[in-house]
Image (cartoon, rainbow, N blue to C red; front, side):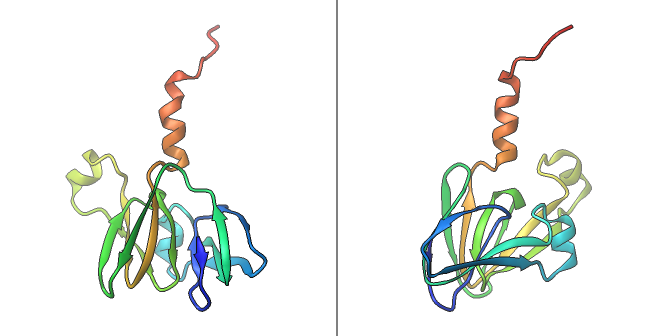
Length: 141
């Protein structure tokens, strides 16, 4: 990821791997209580600022979106790898009882509102664990 002056990047917790000297790593606190409580990533994320190239751990493939002002994208929280600091993040409850019971995606979604760039990961670590779990041998007594 290329960090530009004046445009901080917000990453999922513990995603930072390495960077050039001009990049500063700090903590980012979610501004909304509901985002921290129900957002999966919690209140604390990572903020990259300064200027230079940074490397982040992202699971699966990366899908990049450039949101226009006011444009929104609804995603599962676990698929958010990062976003520019100009993007607003909000947690919303999934509407409808049928969706909550039979939707298979949980009770909450994340709404990202532009302007800015977002990076989504196609396979969060929870998905990797669920995919390999059936193949892990268990000890039978």
